[in-house]
Length: 106
Image (cartoon, rainbow, N blue to C red):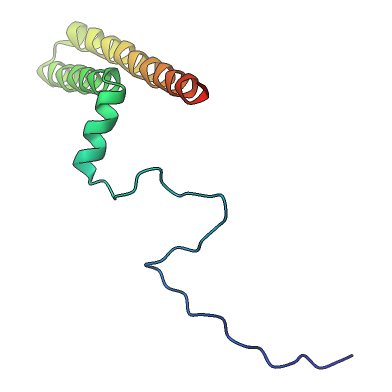
């Protein structure tokens, strides 16, 4: 069995510069987006998702408030409303994904 030859060290890893992979682009956007810019862009692409999230949060908050106050009937109604709002949000996400897939094909 032959002894291995000397190992030459490769270039040092530079975290600021990702490796170049032919045919792969990590982002279609040239500049980095801030959280606010990305949130605004995503909201414009599919405005029903934030509306559904706000509806879900509102129904949950009001339902818990009614539960705390002892209004069990209204609390049950708000928990059912929350489930409906969650379903609306999931449907909005799925429809948004389908629309963006159709858009990218054409």
